[in-house]
Amino acid sequence: YYWKGAPKLDGVIAEVVAPETIVSEMQNGNYDVASMPTDQYDTYKDSENITLLGRQELAYTYLGFKLGSWQDGKNVSNPDAKMGDVELRKAMAYAIDNNAIATEFYQGLRENAKAMIPPVFGEFVNEEIEGFYYDPELAASILDDAGYEDTDGDGFRETPEGEELVINFASMAGGATAEPIAQYYIQEWQNIGLNVQLATGRLIELQAFYDMLEADDAQIDIYQAAWGTGHDPNPTGLYGETAAFNYVRYVNEENEAILAKINSEASFDPEFKFEAFREWQQHMFDNVPVIPTLWRSEVFAVNNRVK
Image (cartoon, rainbow, N blue to C red):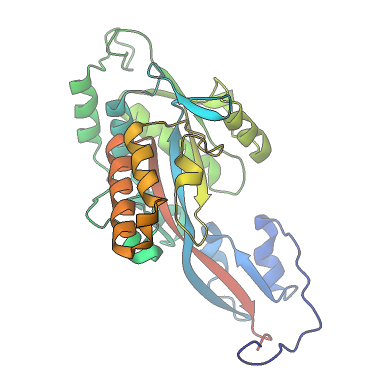
């Protein structure tokens, strides 16, 4: 019952191809359709044997702060967590320029994420949130006001209690941009006086990375990852108290109350639902358990022989 009749295909063969080789594979005509790496856009945008299609991706990239642990089937926040100070988290958010990353590494196919619901979801999005933007002077001022000062003259700030502060940042290996982006974040945080270093001393392979997140490995204080929202942007499965994927281990009574609204019978009313989603985005912006960094576009290459 497909609207143009049955497709003229005997079948479809799907293969997994490394991002490092898919560009040459498509340019050589070895595949009909492929999802393309956006960080390599300049290398294939003018290829004559393919047509490029794009759309907003149901996903966002983010930086997550480790704020607790997984205990007895639920997330438990630790009020004494190293990254537990919301002012410290805000300062780190204002210290980085995600628009520059989108331009330099993704040829404009990504943009600074103002909130945690991608714009493709329309009325779900709280457009009043201006998001975090690059302002290192503001970031430094926030740290000053919160009592983070360099008391021993080593160039890095201590905690308000005068204790050494070393922040371990974890990022996944993979692709040509992973290393320079991770180093950029570290550099910008160091520029505002925070002693941030790469967790384990190197980028971490994907499976090991998520194993460490799930285990609440003490080597990770902040990490970079991405979430696909799916067609329903309901955040409960990622940020609820019993959500196993709540890797930041963020638990907050106000957050739970807003999620309950989103999942309530009243949410069958679209306006009630939209307002609950907007309220949740504002809550997450105010409390910064994660820094949304990039909204994304995805690019597909289609061989010109496909009709």
